[in-house]
Image 1 (cartoon, one colour):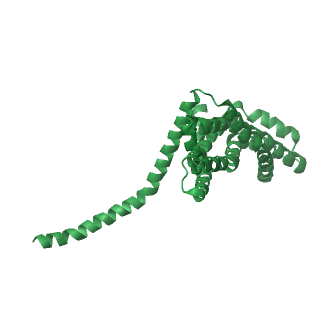
Image 2 (image 1 turned 45 degrees about the vertical axis):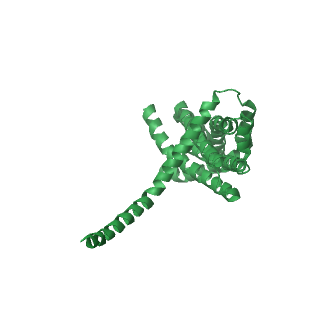
Image 3 (image 1 turned 30 degrees about the horizontal axis):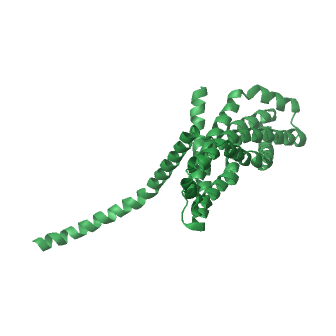
Length: 278
């Protein structure tokens, strides 16, 4: 009886083990995502904790602001100009079907202020700055420079992470404003200069339909995007491992995760901000 009972239990045990492996494979990616989010938020919390502790790293803060903001202006100018021009070209073509080409200026400006400006500016900063953060911090981790900071009684989060996150929160909204202004300029040049839209209608409708709330909405989004992209980039680099290949993988993960996070956050922020504005 005991041998028969054991033989009967063996298939059941195998089925239970197979089911457990299947559940583990199915839930593993979701658990990994949750773990990454939790670790990133933890590092973000540590960065803000050290923001208010002496010594204040003003030099590192200004260097990060220059690298994130000033050095990103050329790519923001180029991308913003052509995004505004291309969107204006498409909008004029569509609106002329309904004899509504006078609304091109306000439509393009609203889209740039609310959506295109903050999202595309943040993605450009991610491509240029988020990857650089992950690569720089990852190289420091692999070469044990971060461990050396510990031995010198310097907190690496305060010295390396906090200035980058704070600088991103400050500079990404400013880059967003540059993107919007240049985008509207590109739209004006195409709509008025090339396609013959009336200049008065173009400008007056911008003044009539675009409110300060639309500009604030874009600035709020850009601040949150700056926080997200810098936190993800710093986290991936700060905890990189596996040599040069690990640094490359950390950089790739930082860019992909930041871009996905920006698009996901954009939806929820839009929903919340529209609800707040009524």
